[in-house]
Length: 498
Image 1 (cartoon, rainbow, N blue to C red):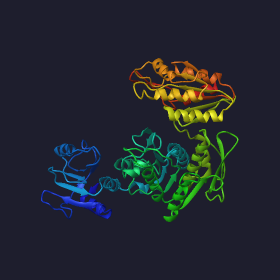
Image 2: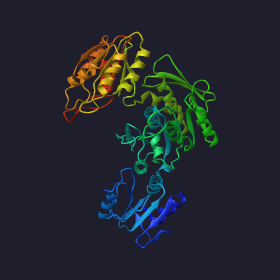
Image 3: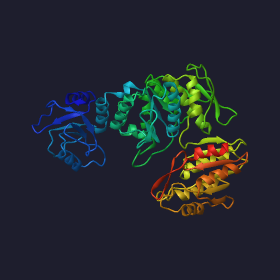
């Protein structure tokens, strides 16, 4: 619930209120007493007790007119509209107004949760899943998650996310639901757009993690320049009570200085110059964490399920953040050993030494990155990739997949990957045509399960098998239906045991 007087007080405190407009031209003070039992920026979901926000680049007056016809009496906007409404609340920034009024409407749920915010060009989702798994053990599954892939408000039940960071109204609604569900912690990815369009305006994180920064999301729709992108990213530093920084990232000195100027406690991780050093061990999935001094009691060896030294650093970031909000070393060690990030370079080892990588790679860049890593790690053995491409959409990806395979793989088994209404053989042929390397052996096997089984059975000690595209997906889209599928990771586990 939110009263009109509260709305006025909050907007005035944030210096967002321009004026109230009523049919009687009361423009200075709240003209009458009113209570809002609902807030919305969707004109199709309003009634007489709704405070409606006229928000978005595509907003049109006809949306407001229809809402008023459906019973709406009050709206809030950056400009008055020529409509018949009991009250128009005019503000200087509608997105900031939406954020501060949403947190008030839902009774400031962020104050009832320990918040960990994660930003960076790469690695956010991996760190989010690592952190949640650690905190699940520490809190007995009382950790909510807002990530690029999935969201959970009860710590157990997941649904697909629409945005990396939800719109502010949805963000606080979901936070409030998480609190009602008994959650004590929230791990969330914070995108550059979240700061660009004020989705997290006014939100302070208990712990902020800044992983890395490189040019991305730059263009007319998102960020016009790298500086704009970086400016939005680094807002997390000044909106966190404590900050964790990767010591070797680009622009580290600027971020370090920013934290110092704001008197924000900081912990760094990375090489020998960092507060906590991350040292790979002989086992491909193991690393040591060494703090000098070890003020969080985390020194020791750890093991993860994801390949790559960069994922060991992601794990270190998760360990540090979890410790700052109450997790101990045992929870950290167990959580990392169990954390499976859907489709993010999950590694399984065949008893003879062969490596099986499971990843969602589905275009040129992601496939190239995955295969290049495998080639670097396995210079002697064969690189065998099993992949396909989705049917009836993103046809341009097929050429890119073929190009990457031609650059790095020794063997390619082209198979089904949500073919929908297209013939898997046709999709495979289009990928195959783009493999401009006669030394790559190319095969087709429509049955993905069979293709995986045969590849694992035949893999030698130095070989690497890449299962790309499906990850842990439990369905296969065929002719408009989502048919049950075990998932690449689960199948690989079964066939390794067999």
